[in-house]
Image 1 (spheres, helix red, strand yellow):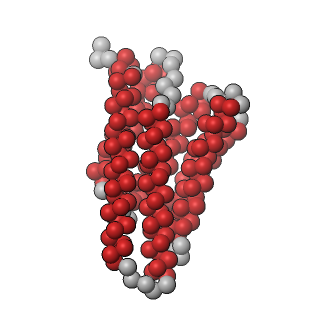
Image 2 (cartoon, helix red, strand yellow):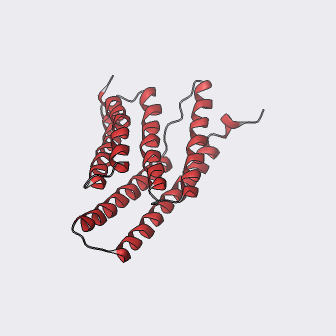
Image 3 (cartoon, one colour):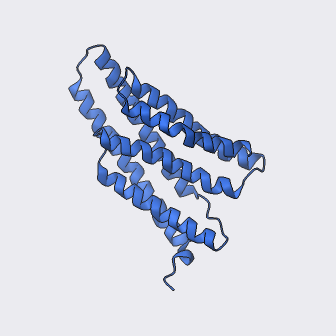
Length: 192
């Protein structure tokens, strides 16, 4: 297994630890979740660059890289719903898009073709990761204030609204990229 594929798999392996850091309440758990999510996000940055630069692009990488992104991002978003940091409608829209694009990829694979991520899918993933990182930064600030026994209800509300806005912006890119995938790959979803 080449280095880019190892990086992709490491992103998937980090997910349970990341989820545990989000959901288990211990001092500075948001900071721990931020660090784990940041590390996983960096593997996404490097795996593709290394694969292209060294000529190590594989069909496994083309399939597993976007899958690892989906697992990481959807884990965060579902945890945010559980914690009251995100609207479930937003997550349903993202899940719908992810299932639709994955279905297209599977249909293409059944014809022996590989549908790789396009620039819009990458923009979608980057905006999602930025939104998630920003939410963790804001939650870490609130956690530090709480540990210092400083009450900041106005800041908490502002952070909640800001996080939700960032997630909705990323969801708009999610919708755009999903529509583009459908249009670009309509031959795989023919009703004939």
